[in-house]
Image 1: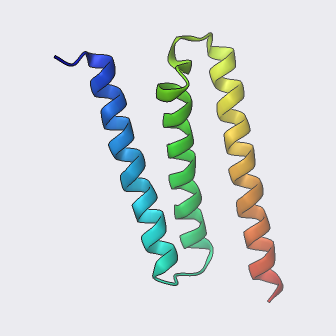
Image 2 (image 1 turned 60 degrees about the vertical axis):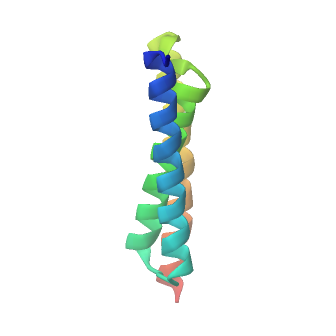
Length: 91
């Protein structure tokens, strides 16, 4: 018998696999541009959020810790997107 927590973790794992495969498919298709970069980074942010909440068990910690960790994740994604945008704008 599975508990609701195990079901949530299983659903999160399936979603992580689907997002990873979608990112790989976009890269394999040779798609370029800021939109594709944004989609791949958005998928990475969603994957990171699931990792933080379900696998690192941050659902039960005080909200300030969740906010801090998610803000760090968004900062990394925004910096990566800005770097990609600058390199595309130079050419």
